[in-house]
Length: 131
Length: 131
Image (cartoon, rainbow over all chains, first blue to last red; front, side):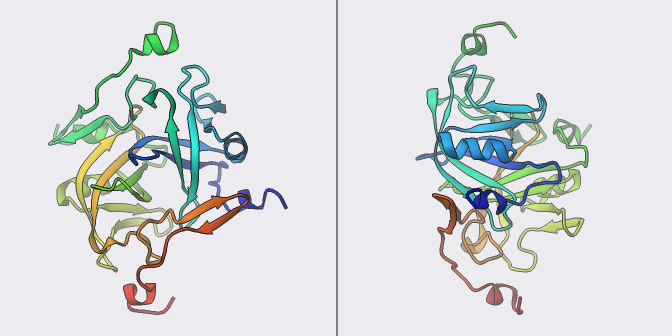
């Protein structure tokens, strides 16, 4: 069966798997997002990351609005088959909707979360609108 | 309030947050595991990773059986506060219960998942028992 590789994934009760996008070369972690079966299939076929938006409840091609696509260089699965790492080239160098390189920009410092990464581009410029 | 930093985390309906353990220095992704509030609190206080085991439904100090502790060098939270990256030093160089460096050792090659990382130590030796 052509989709046997998809059956190897240990999908959660709601049909999802968490996906870590990691930058090829630097190995920096950019995002944690979710995929359903169709998202993973499209990601493999197009070699560009397609996720499942849990808030909007629909497929979401990363960068469809911003242009900040993630070009997929590799797909890895973990030992219990319930988490995925995507090795990606981050188009535009910005993965986060806040205009930062990575979504993981809050660092715990004592008892406070501090912003530890600069905004590279104003989100208004990225999305061409306010808010 | 001393625990205000814990309230900043956007816990899931079942009180958990996914946590990516990333090796300090190489940035390699080692594991994806889960924490509840108590696990994150203990991780911060002890500077060693403590997770919530979803299968055993209890707190689980990483390496408690194997000795393969994860020493925490940094804790980061993402833009929507629902995922964490732990920057760790992996004691013994083995994060996976299969005896591999990383849990993400299955690489998608065409339509097949292939083992892309060597076993560094027989799990029988790690855990001192069969199976």
